[in-house]
Image (tube, rainbow, N blue to C red; front, side, top):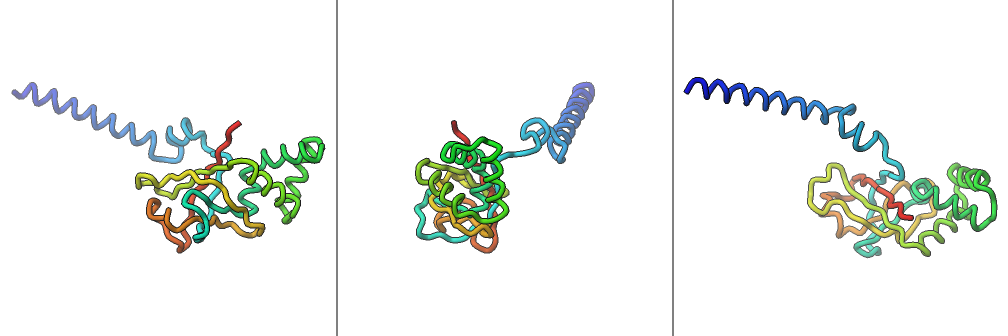
Length: 178
């Protein structure tokens, strides 16, 4: 009986060591999740404060000029290149100039992209603990204010994310297909 108990005690010690090693590898910023899986950086993402937009459908959102300008920079540069017949360095310079100061011409390009393509983004709130708190929404509006860092969202989708309009921030993940 004592021999079996001693073997079980040693096995439990090995399990405890394995448990500690597993959690050490994922719990800090330098853990395996951040270093190996996420790669340390996510491109084409943003975070915006949410504001009510009751006129939007349940699957639609509105984004501000600056957020759209940043997460769809590749599409905007390609559109500038195609429509204006300029080289890519010139297109990049035009895009960069519109990030410093509001450009009505860039806003028109953004609106063109939005209306001629089904542009979807995914949104979630930290921590994402509720089932269904990660939503995919269609961009329905772009606000022309370069200082607007808000995302308009229909109020009826907030309970899934356990969010409200008291300054909550949602994460935005841009879908790149093509």
